[in-house]
Length: 152
Image (cartoon, rainbow, N blue to C red; front, side, top):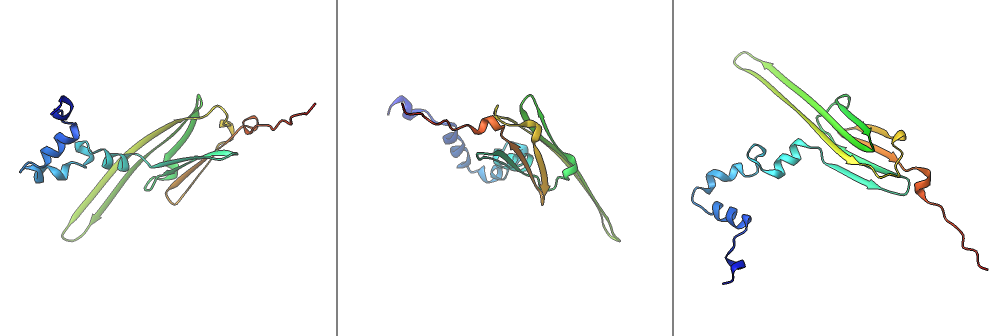
């Protein structure tokens, strides 16, 4: 066996750990954001964002369910687009034999460097059904100019 075959990767170590008899106790915590599960943390803490481009514009689409559009800020500074938001939610129910009060709050910030050929002065934003859409037009000179080749 070579030296490389003897080395175990971190993933090998984790697999070995979860093959342990105590593993069923620890498995529920593996994807929990509090205990460092990246997949669960990313999907709950940050909105999923799609960025696309065509010949006229860049489009940024962010999933922001549960966020009031009034609590979402879109800002461009030094050619960096920043989308941030915060939410606070409270439910209170009172009944004859029960009392329940739940609170949750959270915030996010996502930033993207914009290409030099975008027109930050003409950005348009809209929100509908938990989706934020930011449209950033390209500058006229960025669209290019076709030059005819003269034959002599």
